[in-house]
Amino acid sequence: MNTTSSVAVDHFPDRRHPELNQLRDHDRAAHRWYRFVLSFPPHLVQDYVHKFGLDHRHQVLDPFCGTGTTVVECKKLGIPSVGVEANPMAWFAGSVKLDWTPDPDRLLQIAQQVGEMAEKVLEQEGDQLRTLPGESKQILLANSISQLPLHKTLVLLDQIQQHGEQPSDRHLLLALARAVVTSISNLHFRPEVGVGKAKTDAPAIAAWLQEVSMMAEDLRYLQTLKAAPAQVHHADARQMLQVLEPASIDAVITSPPYPNEKDYTRTTRLESVLLGFIHNKAELRSLKEGLIRSNTRNVFKADADDVWVSQHPEIQRIAAAIEARRIELGKTSGFERLYHRAVKLYFGGMAKHLADLRHILRPGAQLAYVVGDQKSYLQVMIRTGQLLGEIAQGLGYELVGIDLFRTRLATATKEQMREEVVLLRWTGKEK
Image (cartoon, rainbow, N blue to C red; front, side, top):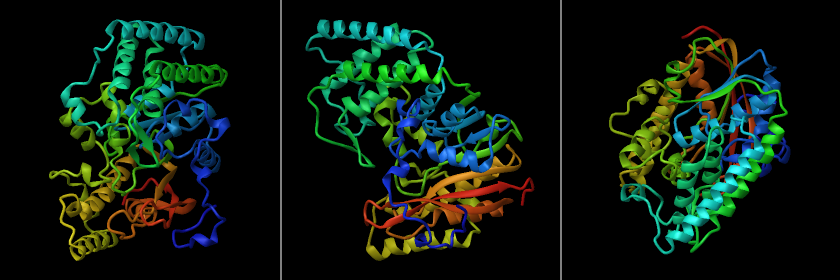
């Protein structure tokens, strides 16, 4: 359905259903290999592929690719696609989910051999438990994995790296990443990432083999499809001209971060450290610098994206209201003092992204951005979709409409919040 952002929620059918954002059984192949808890669902991609009239003649972009929902679904549908993702763990996951070349039987055979070798090493090492370097431990969520499960994971990781073989070794590593967060660690997602009751032990090898078996099952199906070209670039969505060709994209289907004070690097922190994507605080900071500034944990003194919205009256009003509210409530922590700046940097970063994107789009390109309203900053309402649409119009895009995807329950206030799809069209003329 199409509407403008001014239409009230009660004008739509009741969309207060969590299943709208869940993975349907018949969509699970490849997507289930590794997925953000807050990922948008493949069926939403299907909806906008149909709405935009896309087929094998077009190329779709997801500039905030995450773990690859859009590009994986487009590949399954036979539509060429490309993704851009700054988080190295998410980039790795999306890339592996696009690789359907491993022989399923050989993948299982290698996994069984690796598992047996890992069991032998565990028997040999006995009570000598492996652990992570001190710098790596410092950037993990405290107590996110217990000592014995960590030891088993590190032994298994070592055996995968020693005895895995191309092209299956990356699949074995991704299976381990998923097993760690779902079965081996103490993490839970509700939907925020947190630490639950400590597990004194966990069946690490068995959990990993189960994930590999699921991958093999999916590969048997995926290899029957007439797949389209797809790839994911490890890059910043605000600097896409470094990796994408001018005038090469016909459509965008994406879900960028929201201005919601969620540190998205926490969601992938444990597996990012275990697989060697980040080792210390300096590398974590470098990762955060490549992301849109959606929370105060990745705001830095030298940031200047807010200049892009310095003349936008509503964004400036919201930022001023947040700061006034902070002062009124006597909130004085360092992060709270950055709330108003984080909002301006977020929308400034999105403006910079949309400005850069114009050079990559073909005239008439259609865009769908899944975003949500927010009240994370001292309960000051941020109409993310409406503001994003206004920014896009100022850059030469046509605001086609704003669809309601669903309403969701705010964690703090239990208030129903809108999650929307901002629909744009690139006119071909910059403002």
